[in-house]
Structure formats: C-alpha cells, structure tokens
Image (cartoon, one colour):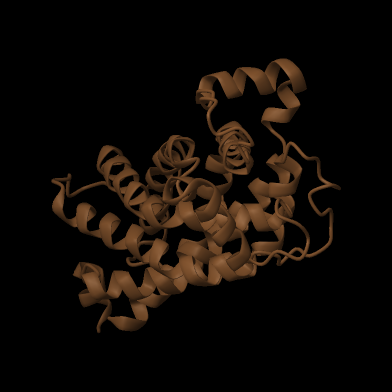
Length: 278
C-alpha cells in the first residue's frame, strides 16, 4: 500500500487481532525475567523466599497461553473504539483514547487475570519450587474454584485503567507531535516505539502502588476462605502502616524499566505488524 493509503487507512479487525497477538507474545516472552523479579520484590514472602534470582522463567507456560489472546482482545477493542468514537480532525482526542484504552483493558483482563494469578503463584513458588503452571492452575481451581482465578480482578482493573489513561493518550499525543515535527505520517515502527517507551515508563512509575496492591491480592492464598477479604483501600493502608511508603513503590525500578522497554517492543511490534499487513 502507498504512503498515502497507509496514512488514511485504519487497521481492520483481523489486522488488529494479528498485530495485537504478535505484540503481546513478543513483549511478555522477552521481558518475563524482569516481571518475575518485580513480582518477587513485591511479594509479602520476601524476595529470597519467593525464589530470589533463581528460576526467572518459572510460570512462563501460562504466559505462552494467555499473552496473544489478551493483547489481541485489547487492540481489537481499542482500534474499534478509536475509529468509532467522534474525534477532532486536527488533533487526537485524549478523552477518546482514555475511553478506548480503558474499555480495551477491561475486556483484556477477562483473559489476563487468570493468567496473572497462575503466573504469579508459580513465580513466587507459592505451591513449591517444583510446581508448574499447570500444577498452580489445578491448585487454584481445587482450592477456590473459578472465582480463585479472578482473585485480584478488581485491583487489576483499578491499576490498568489509570495506567492506560496515562499511557495511551500520552502515546498518541507523542506520535502526533512527532509526526508534525517530521512532516510525515504514518511514523515508522521504531519511531512509534520511542513514543511507546516514554509513555509506558511514565505510566508505570505513577501507578506502581496499584501494581503492588494487585500483586499482594493475587498472592494471598486465603488459608481461611471463610474470612472476608479486606478491601483494596484497607490493604493499601495496611501496607503503608506496617511496611512504610517504600513498600508501596517496591519494584518501581524494574517495573518502570520493564514497561518502558516493553512499551517500545509492544507498540513497536504492533505498529510494524499492522504496517506489514497493509
């Protein structure tokens, strides 16, 4: 397709599906060790007891299954709403991108949360060092049923919506300004990747306390299921009171580095995959 055609074209549902699947799989596999270290830093068991530097690819099986459909669900929803919602012709609409990205995350979390629960239980050796992703999946189902696979859904949504509300409007704005500066559209994939890296890093640092909360909820084995789970605000207050402000930002450095680099790969691969299909 010519540059003019690419400038005017929007990705189809199928193109968004394929590009999203490629982007999700690429970023999750490439940066999985950093995600493992971040999860262990945030675990109430402590970094060493959760596995330390050993077995950083533990739990990767669940990611291999869940990455592609989760990212595909996000991008098909995001691109559909971007094209559907009314917006100004001269510049991107931040509100539209907030709505589109937040809705996309909500849909993706229906797939992503069960994957995250299994992954994080395996990463932190919650069921023993020898437990595989399949073992963790079976244990969660046996102990808590399907509801256990969605433990942390609320905190995950509470983290992802603020995150995407920062990342994607900033990403689209940076792309718009860079296009203006260079005098051409669309951007090359590597140029979009730079915008994605900066936007992802900023959003990651700001939303780290919500990520800590999500991790603690997902790793809560609930030895006495009859007791009600504390509310997210109660958990945050408990962490702050007993462990200090630093605990709310545990893992902020690997999280920011991982998501900043991951944002470059995730959005760069997505834009490249869309361009290849056009």
